[in-house]
Length: 255
Image (tube, rainbow, N blue to C red):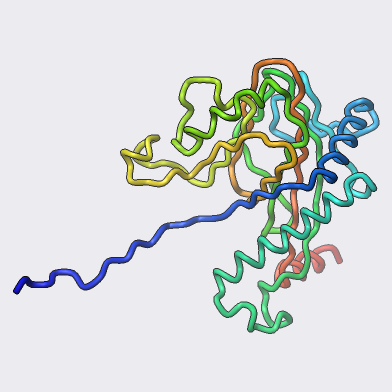
């Protein structure tokens, strides 16, 4: 009779965080495209947001968008709802009995969410955004970007790009023209996931009109430049997540 050497083996993935991918309805996207075109036709009406942002945008624009407008109210509803869902999903994983704790006695219970700021980015060929992260007034916060309109010069390369998007490195070609990199960690041993036994901790996401990416405010990200005609238009926002603990501290500090 052979001797049993192992009674069990379990694999545990080391997961750090989550990002949400949200698809806007065609109607909501059309409204944003119409509004963005209007903004870009009269850029002097809107505050130049360049001094607040990391983008190296020489041909395009970076413009702050007022929060209280009829054109963006549906987008703000989408972002606020997604932020609530994101936080509740996260905290219920961290605190297994979260739903059973009375909210008034739980410092981590969600008090509310608030879109802090919103801006529009337009990129021409050669414009890019170096790796950076965002900030929020609240210690717990989310950031996001929305692909509003994508030029044909980028769309033509989208089908090639997903082949290597999780490989951990740029392949030396132009497959990532106009793509956005999300980076939540680093590859310690190698840029090649097949050599390192380490899952990639970054993702190149292809531009798709109407797609929102929502992620923790600390997550590094960058926008690759592209070549060719046309305008790449996105919106971006930061969202405050107010828990009981930080809501009270923030309000007391204003008194």
